[in-house]
Every structure is written in structure tokens, then in C-alpha cells.
Image (cartoon, rainbow, N blue to C red; front, side, top):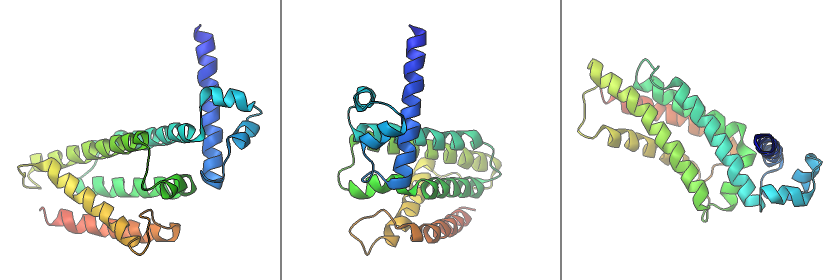
Length: 204
């Protein structure tokens, strides 16, 4: 029984890798289940056995990418010299994550007003892990006396994360969609670093 389960897990992992490669190069809208099955030399029926439709397959690839991103956060959690370094790490890591997988996120542009609940759940988990990492760094700074403790420290972290999100929204304010064009990513990245630096300096 375990051997069968292991084989199924291996096959599922290969499907996720092939799907990610397709989504990454061609985007969600220009990728078909037939093409993914062809890349794997697998029948379409077998592919649909593991994933009933393309959107569910996309969600599982998104979940895998999110876990990779969360791993990068957790690996560094508690190791930062100060809160600014922690925020810079979060900003840089997310920027690299989005830039590296930019075409993959065309699903967000297509479905921006109607993202599936499962995608929102993944985004909520990412946000939770970001807050946890940053809260730990803030607590370390308050313990050392570098930053004065506020009554609601988590609200402070949430406020700056919301402000950083707003930088992205401003970059797309002239469009009907909020997901930025690729050529705007570096400008957003640099503005976020500057905003974080100014914000954190005001806490000292």
C-alpha cells in the first residue's frame, strides 16, 4: 500500500513541476491540460484523475510555491540584526519571488476580481507567516530597548505591510487591474525599501 501511495505522490509531484514550467513560460491562459499531459507523456484521462481541472492544478502549484516562499521566511526568522533588516529581507524575498514567477501570476490578472477562495487562503497563510517573522524581530528590538514597545505591536507590523502593499497599488492606479506590469516591479521594489526605512526610523 505504501509503495502505491509513494508512486502516486511521485507522479503528482511530477505533474506539479510540469504544470509550473508551463504556467511559468506561457502563463495560465495559454496553457492547456493537453500540453501538460503531453510534456509528461501521460494520458489526459490520467492527468484529470489527479487534477479535475486546470484551475485546481494551478492552485496546487501555487500552494507549492507558497510553501517554498514560507520556507525562506522561516529559515531566517529570529536571525536578523534589527527590524529594518527583517523588513528588507521580506521585501527583497517577495520581490524576487514575484519577478522569478511573473508569468505564472497572469492568473491573478485574469481573475483579479474573482480569485478562488483557495487562493485567498494561501495568500492569508503567506501573510500570517510574514507577520510572525516580523513580529519576532520587533519583539527582539523592543526587548533590547532599541524600539519603544507599543500597545498593539502586531497592528504596527500590519500597518507597514498595508503601506507596502499600497505602493504596488499606486503603480497600477492608471489601470483597471492592480497587478503591476513587469517593468514596474523594480520601481515598486525600491520604493518599498525606502518606505520601510523611513517608517522604522520613526520608531527609534
